[in-house]
Amino acid sequence: MPLDAAPPLAISTSGLTKSYGTRTAVSELNLAIPRGVISGFVGPNGAGKTTTIRMLLGLIAPTAGSGEVLGADLGQPQHFLHRVGAIIESPAFYPALSGKRNLEVLARLGGIPHVNIDRALRRVGLADRASDPFRSYSLGMKQRLGIAAALLPNPDLLILHEPTNGLDPAGIAEMRVLFRSLADDGITIFVSSHLLSEIAQICKHLVVISSGRMVFQGHIGDLMNRTQPLLRATPELLGQLGPLERLATGLGMVTQREHGSLVGQGDSRLAALLFRAAAQADITLIQLDVLRPSLEDTFLALTGGTAGRPTSVAGAWALEGTHG
Amino acid sequence: MANAFASEWIKLRRRSLFYGSYVAILAVACLVTVLTFGTAGGTAATGPGGASAPLSQLAQSGGSVNGLEGSLTILGVIAFAIAASQMAMEYGQGTLRNLLVRQPRRILFLVGKFLAVSTFMIGAVALATVGSVVMAFVMAHDRGIPTDEWTMLSGLRAMGTGFIDVALATVGFALLGMTLGIVMRSSVAAVAIGIAYLLPVEQILASTVTSTAGYLPGQLLSAVAQGGTSTIGYAHSLVGTLLYLAVAAGIGIALFVRRDVAS
Image (cartoon, rainbow over all chains, first blue to last red; front, top):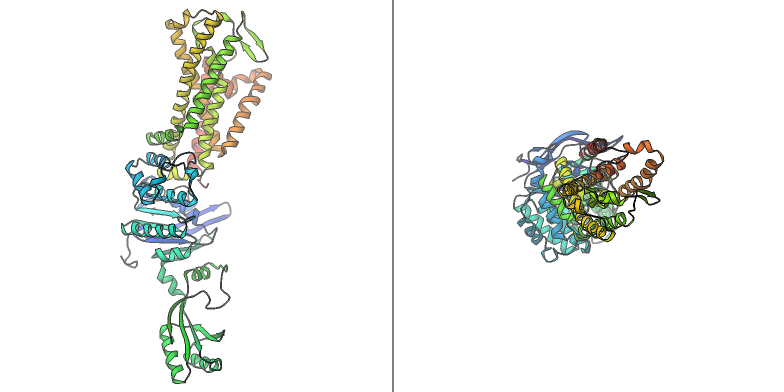
């Protein structure tokens, strides 16, 4: 379903706020998470992601605001939590009990059929180690058990906080496949992660918060389109850089020189114009790239972060197409 | 509530806790019974280790559960520690958040958990009663104490009453433990503070300021277990205990229901 067709919402909040004394952890959050999509929830450490997730799960009472989860009032979690699976921070289970017994504790409590336990364990690949005590599990296995616990009630909505923490690359890839298959089954997944590359691969929808406030919500493509792509042109001879710069300026580009190349904002259409103008001026281009900003770069620009920002203008931008 | 009860029992059934607690409680009850009968003399006496019963008293209908009633303080401390740690560990291990996602009706969750811990303790008291009564017969035979009255209807009734009183008091200790577990949210802190209060602090208060004994929760619970003492009547101890437990339950429920789960 296209995101702009006002689909029914799995999660919606209005002015959701949580304050601790004078400190506001989450401020007037208006979430609108469509049903049936994988929605990423990202923000720097301390942005308010965990507090938001806890409010959505009825663990923390909001200071102000309201909301609905799966059409039920946020203030009445008993009306929707039986359809929700969740991982909240690190997987927390009883060390002395086996993985299966741990799931039994939760299944009994939630009135969930016993058959769901084995199914959930199989789905996350833990069936062989189900009888081992939780304390003997590796971090990745603990995380899988957390995902199995979230799948216990056959949920319509999964709220996952850092679900791939501790998993190796193969495990992460497995989880990616699992999440996609769950989404294909119509389950809405609201997932927070620090792994922006993972979010970019599995999410269509994204919510970005910073300092407790929402800075973006919508289709991930819309976010990426907010930042203009970069054009990088490299002439064969260094002496042609000046004439090339004049041509680019003539086309309306604002450029700067960087390691024998010209770099400036521009899309594929402008790249074609520059390529043609350079050819007519007898300038041979050995490289002409249109670079899209990565999600990480866009995220950092949105949230005001600087960590890992490249020193070169085009350094971290993903290659969209090469001409010339 | 039934789901919360059944779920809690999965945790209580784990071997180390189940067998460890039951064996410890059985051993304590048997040991106290042996000491009660072993130190009994011709008349009542008070020594550094506490009061010893006269042989004539042990021969009465309630003599078979005298040892059980005497072990209440230790049974109570064990019940308190188990309940406090079962509650506080949910906070400490972070498991409470998972549990409350599956059962968001917090009062039902808490009551189910309390009932599970209570039945666990009642089972332990039942085992302790059986062990203590068997040991009482053995010791009575050894000390030449007549047991005719024990097996009469009044004796059997005294056994039943003794079991109920000790079970009530033990459940009371468990309720206090759970409340402190909720307040402290740390097993170590809750158990340490609880035991420090129930054993040295309250014992010293009760023995140095005699008028306070009838108002201290641990003393009241001990009096309930013994069916009343020479200084605290049964009715007084029962009413006082119920008041304390009502206040503890109120504090525990209010905190548990209203407090954010941020751990």
